[in-house]
Amino acid sequence: MKQKVKIRLLPLLVGVLLASAVVGPAGAYYYCYAEWVNNYSSNPDFRDLDHNDENAQGFYYQLGGDSSWWGNYIYGDGQALERHWKDPSKSGNGIDYIYADKAHFAFFSGHGYDDGSGFAFGTSQDDFKLHYNDALWGNTQMDWITLDACRVLREDRHTNWYSAFDGLHSMTGFHTNCYDVTDRGSVFVHRLVGTWTVQPITTAWFVAAKDTEPSTTYAAALARDRCWSDYVYGHGSQGAPGTSFLYSKYQC
Image 1 (cartoon, rainbow, N blue to C red):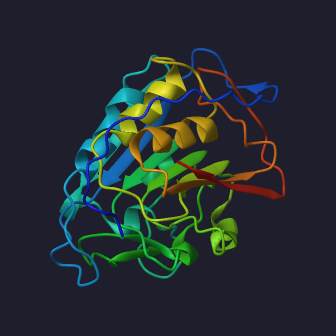
Image 2 (image 1 turned 90 degrees about the vertical axis):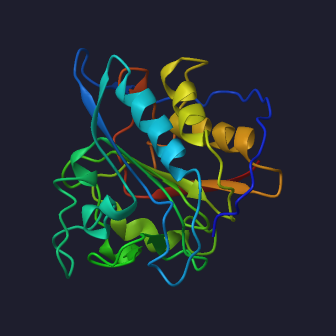
C-alpha cells in the first residue's frame, strides 16, 4: 500500500551494467503504454492516492517523446481496467493484446497488494485486482513492464510472476512499500534515454527509486537471464530471453 508522503530527490551515481550484444533494428519505432489509479473510493481494500497520474504521465510522455518511441495509450482512474492487463487465455474478458501487451514497454502506477499477488484498480470492471495468474505478457509484444506499486515484487513471492513471462524480458517494481510521489516515472525515463544519462532498465529503475524514496524502501527487479542488462530500444542493446530468471532487491 503506497504511503502518501512527498520525498525530495537524492542525488546518486551508479555504475552502468554491461549489456549483451543484440541491438534493436535502427530506425524502428517502439510503443509505450501506461495506466494509473488515484481514485480507489469504490475499492474497499484501499484508500485514495494523489500522484499516480503525474508518475504515469511522466513515464509515458517522456518515453513517448523520444525519437525511437511513440505513446500508444494512457488511461487513468475509471478508464484503467484489469482486463487491459489480462491475457485472453485466462478466465474473464482479458484483452491485453489490444492494450498493455500491444506495447513494448508498459507502466502501471497505483496500489499493490501486501501479499505480492498483484496490483489494484479503482473499478471492478472486470475485477479490482490483476492477479499474477491473470498475466501472460510478451506473447503479443511487451518486452518490459514496470509496476510502480507496493510489494508487487516481494523477495519471498517473486517466483509467482515466472508464469507471466511469455516473451517478456523483465519486470521492475518494489519489494517493500513505496511512496506516493510525483516524479518517479519521469526520473526513470531520463535515465533510460540519455536526458541525464543512459542506463540499463534495471539500473535506471533502482536509481529512480533511490532518487524518490527513503532508505527504508527496497526496489526490486525480475528478469530472464541475458535480459538483466537490457537497454530500451534506440539506446543500447538487449538480450534474447533465456529459460532461467534473475531477481534482485535494492535498498534506496
